[in-house]
Image 1 (cartoon, rainbow, N blue to C red):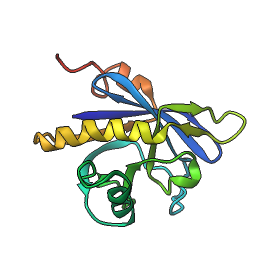
Image 2: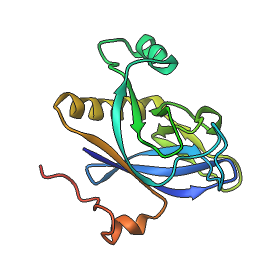
Image 3: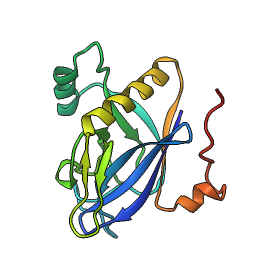
Length: 167
């Protein structure tokens, strides 16, 4: 399974994107802003292709296990091998104060033109995404995410295309 995160708006404190699954827009994302030099917990990850694996330890894992129950929650979605970064998760949250370098997901977004961006219906988006990803992992699929600032990289074919999977 391949997820695509296409960033479309970078503000002073945050970055907004759209997450694609099976070639279709699935939800919005919010990350920290771009910085030429990393500031821990305040900088978005670089463009790239990253494996997503389940992480079954840490504060988020314990809180989500309690919040969503062990029948649903099997571990946090963690991006692996991100240059210069560790502990990059996909999780619930509404604004840049909740990111610490991670990727937040939501079903609605307030654009970051005049104020900081804001994600709404984050829990709903997270649960829907989590179910898709966990099903793929449990079926033995590798899961990856391709992160880009340039939608034309995907649309012109220099990255993998956003064509939907065969049905």
